[in-house]
Image (cartoon, rainbow, N blue to C red; front, side, top):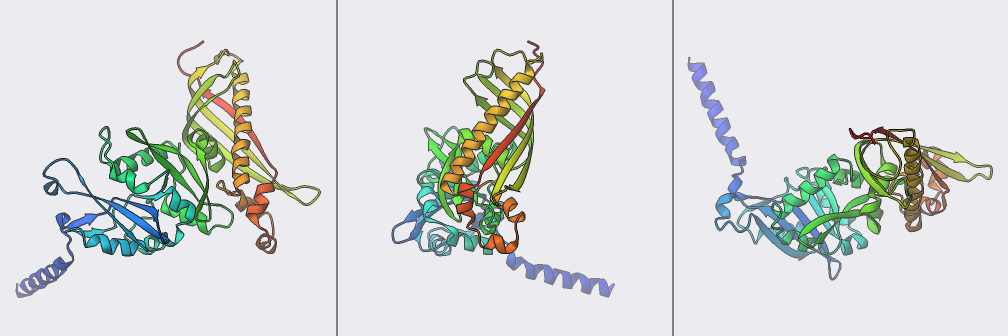
Length: 367
């Protein structure tokens, strides 16, 4: 009996000692979204959004605490912001990093160092480039939507889930930054009227934004970038048998083959096999007949020509966002690869795209 009493007393003392590490929710400011913009003298402007617990938002007008400062590094900015809030600033709930376009074009890898070293920050945090001022976006309120930080995060997660946008997290960005056969990418957003819209993809070379792909080309980039399991896309043409088609439940398989021609130069062949269900079709063909094969061929040809256009855009800017360099690297010796200027080689690499598109279903309407 005495032993049980002593054991209980020891447990009480141990648990009491652990209470020093507790964090009371109302006293902690968990950063949900962090925005960084270029500032004079090679500094950055940091803006953070911190959700307010209900008792701190008694007027009901806002649910976020917004803080902004100019500093030389994110840690210095955090220290400065900490002096302006009554709560302990914590980074463990960051969902999105917003990078202003000017800073993205200047290069921002040095500022990511602190986030990679901090174990409380998830490597799944989204990396987003803002066309314009990143701090301005999270400082705005959008009445038709939830609070801004949550609105941006849910907008990105929705597009990731339906594979309309490549997942651009801190992990993917860092992986591609250190991979000499692939360049990083980031989602691109902008403020449009009373909403925030995903406007495309920011193409990088190392940590600098070099060019942008508009939203209309993102589905082509997705087909070239990876295999899809549940994607969707819509395309339009001038052909009377294919004025418009919308395809959902897209499953695609990408295969890249690198060959060497007789002159010793490398060539790339990208093979795409795509299956999808027609959600909308405008054209003269009847999908319930053998004319369906004509539409499949038209879609295949359109994807080939448009995919080549996207590749030429990347080649012109010497940024390999789809990772062709990894396949070229695997086809040559280590010494040969180390002597190769991949961005220069990529800009002149002959690339061919081959596409086979198949309609799985065309709806319950039989024309």
